[in-house]
Length: 249
Image 1: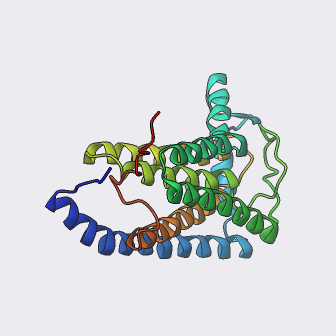
Image 2 (image 1 turned 30 degrees about the horizontal axis):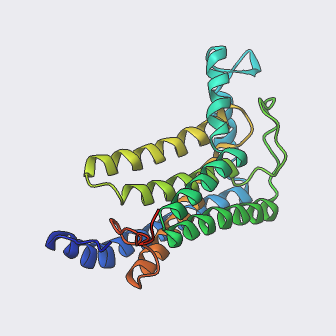
């Protein structure tokens, strides 16, 4: 089935996608990548130690560092929130999204999501192994941890997965309020996951800031590539539908 666009939609597809989108995404790559480089440099030089220590201890009971501030239910809620950025949950969300896009005939979008998330996981592992920063030892960990501390994998991968999927879903919605809601939800999930890692004592605050930065930079890069592929017709444009089968059901 052929999709028809109004003159305003065609104008947006021509100038909005081809000019504004790539410029914004390229700016995001540069901004967030620079933020990560600056944070990483401070971490390597040991300049973030005072900041990390002060903020980590501010979230703990002064009389008992093993006890996070707040009631017991808040600590349980933090564990639930941090689980939203875990490999298993992100894996389920990513696979489900890919299957959904394939069923909708959007193979290019499905491939993009796969590359974005899997590439982010590889990048996260490389960065963790490269910096090899120990986990915080000021307070007992409220969860089990198995990898190095910098950057936060939960913060990074949640930024990549949720921001990428949020941007893809938002571009299919007709109303600006819905677009804003979807992107705000993606940002909110990314933020609370990162905060929960510090609250539970498994990451230094600078780990989370770095994870957010490199994750947002990677998501911006993926979006930039998407816009370039859309211009070439290799990834579906907003509102585009896959051809329907002409065979009998």
